[in-house]
Picture 1 (cartoon, rainbow, N blue to C red):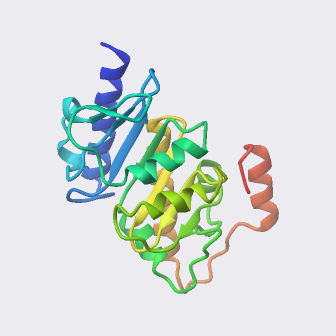
Picture 2 (tube, helix red, strand yellow):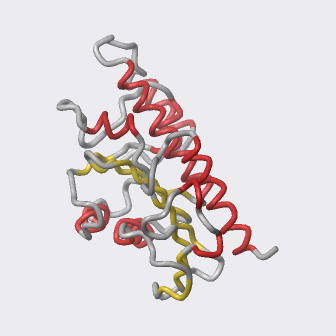
Picture 3 (cartoon, rainbow, N blue to C red):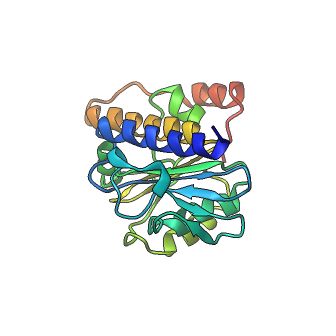
Length: 215
């Protein structure tokens, strides 16, 4: 089995897992991943994560030209912005996960540090998450907003829309975006409860110990 065939199967397997557990529904969400030749495999527009066909994934060459498969997600400008600004990016995942979207709607949502410091794991996997304003789905301005971060964030939250996470590979990106949703769920469950969060000193220790990019 070729490396590309394995990657196609992995994208579809992970997407189905996300769908089956309710992390994105209907025909929402999109995934892209680097191929060995510098191209991309991308989930097609209007497709359901629960029923992806590995052979129909959109295939781009290293020059960014569509060379096979169905038409790609309309969020390509968003994905491209991460690949262009973060050289370590091997995959990008975007979901419409419920709790992270809910947290983005709260009037006190922190634009520069979207997730409260509830556990060390979101810090380790995501660093700081930037909350971006609302954009129409497919708006190229989303890509421009990500480029404006100059590669300093591996994860952003699109207000009233959903999270987007870049990782070294598709499994790492999926794991990180699940951590984002889990932390958002904790934050929503604990609203009004005055929870004991990690202290700045504890956050600093996590950042140092696990070499987290914390700009």
